[in-house]
Image (tube, rainbow, N blue to C red; front, side, top):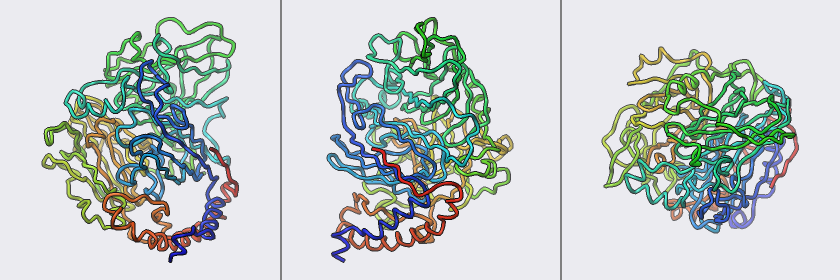
Length: 595
């Protein structure tokens, strides 16, 4: 046993890595150093910015379906850190999800390696820091998951692809903004100061040290992968004198619709095609916040430049007009027009529409009402009157090693009615391989967005007033788009369906950072009693321990490694049986190293 603790299981790991490589995809190795940088000054004021390898935004993860990604993350900050992978489903592997309910944080001066797979996914996503209000300081970056070569993309290959991360920004330290959350003014008011494009200020802001610009060639078509990485504001996106064709959102190919502008809500990602069909010149790229009276001159509006390669004419004139930022009907109608492309393949060769919700039988319905409360003399955000209280021990570790003892009580709070106002650990059961209906009700006067880790969900309905089972008659069950973040309009509701085939512990949260930080979240336990590691991965051998597990398991960690080595062997054997099956779709034994 001592030998097992003192030395890595080289043979087992060699076999495991070989079989994973052959059966699934490339191995991508990244080394990230996360640090505070005070020299970037995106809005020309002194403030700390969270960088990765000196970059803001952080580096692109450019993967293909089924690739295995290894991110060795060094925390050079002065606070604990976690990174989550927004929209990456972590199939059978919530151990890598990077949120407080699944992972112990990486302590200052330490490093930890995430290992996860882009299993059966394609599309546009992003990553960001998930704890300590860090997202307000940066640390985010783009993720592309490309189609395998054997699966045709439903549009001609663009000349180039551009990642465009747009979000609101405070011109002060994220630590100061975090401290403001203790007050009603900070929690419920205090809007952001600016909007940034790829970490840069507005082209029209004289105080901005730089602005974003994309160079294009007349007559060519380009793919823009647009993500809202902000913490509060939805925005409307448009390009002067150019239209765009919507083709993808968060891993789903959409029916292609031509748009003058596009609403993108916090946490959402889209792909649009833009053809450079104008006269050679420079044109404004614009993102204006929703539900906010922004002025062109004050830097709140994000403005970049679409630059034609032969242009000598700078962008000029008024910014292209967009919808009224307070016009909910425009936004709702546009949201309803975004439909799933039922006939194209995506991560798999069969059409997306093979998996649909036309005749599903629901196993569960959660009606989740988002609101606010004052608890223990402080402002909080709530779900069904419960404000989530983060325990010292992540739920995933407590569930696996301690059966929850001393950390949580499963299903303590109602998921379809209000509870007495309180703070607690909101952990709810999801029925494995059952269909769940999630109805998000927004009791507030501001836009909200909700995200479910581990799954894509079918956006079946938007409505006003109170939801009831009769509301289902208005659902779109034919071609609802599948995504992982849905907007919920003020005083309205949104409904989604999800198939819970991915066992694990999964975060269900508001994507608005204030809401999330102040308790508007819960966790979903999707449990499969089958111990076969092909059903759910065992804990990683480098698992971090904290809370109760730090003291109760540290002395027996060697035993844990030994026990789950047996599971790993079983898993590799299972994967080896699928090599021929996977191989016929074109993945092969090659390795790609990036870092």
